[in-house]
Every structure is written in structure tokens, then in C-alpha cells.
Image (cartoon, rainbow over the protein chains, first blue to last red):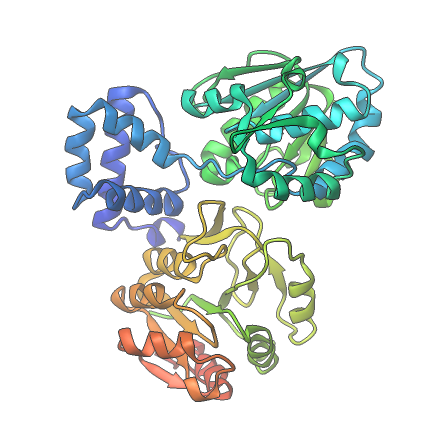
Length: 278
Length: 190
């Protein structure tokens, strides 16, 4: 029934050929990305590049490495903000931090950290709750360019007003301006915030586990994957979490439609905070 | 081939239009309905709870990869685009389209891709053009298109824009839209 529904149109076949080509040539694997949003981003990319068709893009991919780099950025989504979904941080502070206090050393994997705003938000939360010195955050992304922005921790000052509001809603207990220095239209985050952060390249699609973690945060990343790939990544997360480790997903993400639903129990259901069973 | 999905887009004035539409749908309405109502990015699930009061069809906010089931009403969540794949929904946080996230165009275009002529696209009252391109895609893929008649819309901008650029199958007052949906989605409707 489902197969009958998913008869591929000509555009779908072109998309398939393009991502196959990108994978064969460069090893970046978009083959199991969610089809509808992938197609949308490819169409947007064609418009931005002034290309008439996917076939034309195929030719560029073959010849023009710079175009490939732009395509990789165009196919990934980097929407983020400090204290995005503030209620998540409130729940983390109240429900997760007390659990983390029982550990002598806390390893956190922030998978798909994009330009880093949510990593620094977590560092601030951990600092304010007095456990940051015992934490190490491994913040990973597939894209070196966004990771560099994350490492720098410099953001447009114009965003600070919004971030301040979100910080307060997230239960922040200080003045948000303590955390950055304003300079020439930029806000430079205090370097101490990344004292226990390690930024690194990691591709959820093709790379394996690299440590055992007490917490894995992966918010609004898996929505771009189809269910096959989601299950594959959940397998990776499950095997990378310690017993009773904590998994945090995005607001509209759920384990319900995955093969790992029963391996976790909800810790804060509405905030998509789960705890691994033993 | 029967219709399997109804996609509805609305912005300004949409709340009361949706309430009236859902209120007059029978409890055995056989087709899935997906709705984008433009909303503030911080709005919570109160919209879903509000609309649920007026219908016995289950109304829910979509989570990623929610299965599309007949007779269910699905709302796009605040601050996410709602996309349709064959048999399931997916979400994205891509940039807003015409300042909107969720965007009506994104829902309608992806639904047109996935459901083609098994799709009904509906545009109700609205204050901007988001939805017009989407309805054109529904039409181009052989789906049925319905637009609320501008003179009955709280805000006629969206209906007028749609009528001006898409050769819409039906332009109807709100009350007649529901009746027409019931007719189209009945076994004899096509």
C-alpha cells in the first residue's frame, strides 16, 4: 500500500540521482534524508545558484568543488538560538540536573550543534547550577564551517535582545549581559563558557560512537532524516548512552515512531526528555 | 481514485473559520485533514485544544513522522513547517517562507507532490499571499482546489490572490465548503 503510494515522479528520480552522485564522489550521505524537505532545499538551492534544473546541478557537482561546498551548506539546516524553547531548559534544570549531581563526572554529547548557541546555553545552565566544572560537553556537527562559528562564540549583537528574553524565560538567574562582551555590533561570549566544551566533526549518518555519555542532546536534527535513518541514529544514541542516561530531543520529536520507544522511559514527557532503561 | 487528504491554509481570521468548518464535519468524515494556521512562534497547544471542542474528530498537533490516518485532524505546530510525505508527516525548521513558519505553501506543495490527484487543497480567510503558490501546485498535480469566497472571508486578501492566479475549481462561502468536502470525500464524490 505504502509502496504503491510512493511512486517516484521524474523530479524524485533526479533528486535520487543527485544524492547518489554526491555520495559516490564525496562521501556525504543524504540518501536517507526526509524526502519532502530535501526536495524543497534542492529547489531553493537551484534558485539561489541560478540553475535551471537538477541535471544542471549534477554537472556542477561533478566539476566544481566550491559548488559542492555551497550545496552541503544548502542541504543542511542551521536554525538555532540561545535558549531556544526555554521551557526545555527549565525542565532540564529542575529534572535532569538533580540526577547529574549524583555523578562525579558528566559527559554530554550535543549532536548536531550547528553554530553553537544551544551549546553555550547549556554551559550557562550548568554553570549556574554549579556543576559545570564536572562536565565535559562534546559538541559535534557535520559541517566544519558552522563548527568554526561555534568555536568562535561570536554572534550578532542584534540577537542579544531576543536571547536575553529567552534566557530569562529559561530560568536564568543572572543578568544575561554578564555572559558576553559587546564589540562593533558583535557579542563575544565569555571564553570561560567553552572551557569544558570540545567541538568536533561528527557525521550522524556515517560515523559511529566515540564515547559513553550521561546525556545526549539532539534537538531538531532527526526531523531531517527518514525513519530508516532515524532508527539507525537512535541505535547509535542508545549504544552511546550509559545506563539510565538521558536523551533530549526537539519539541516536536518523539521516540514513539521509532524502534527505540521501549528502551527509554519519559522523564519529562512534554519536553521530550527521556531516560534510558537498563 | 478517492481523495485521501485535505490540506487547509488560513491566517488572519482563521480561528473562527476553522471552528465553523470543523463544527459541521460529521464524526464519520472519512478523510485526513491537515491545517496550517499562521500563528506566533511561541504559541502553545491551546489552539489544538480550542478546536477540539468543536468536533468529535480527533484533533492533534503533529509530531515528526506522525502517520496520516483517515478522519483525523492535524495541526501544524508553532515555529515548524509541516510537510507531507506518502503516509506520514515530517517537520522542518527551515527559514520562514513569506515570513511564515509554518507556511501554507510548504504544506500544500509537499502534499501535492506526495498525494497528487488524491488531494484537496482549501484556502480560507487570510491576510497575505502565503498559500497561493501551494494551491497552484495542488491544481497542477491534479488535486481539487477550493477557496473561500472573498466576500465571506474575514480577510479577503488570500482568497482574492488565489482566485486571481489559480483557476480554482470551487469558490464557496464557508458553510458550503464543508458540505462540498463531505460530498467530495464520500464514496460517490468523484
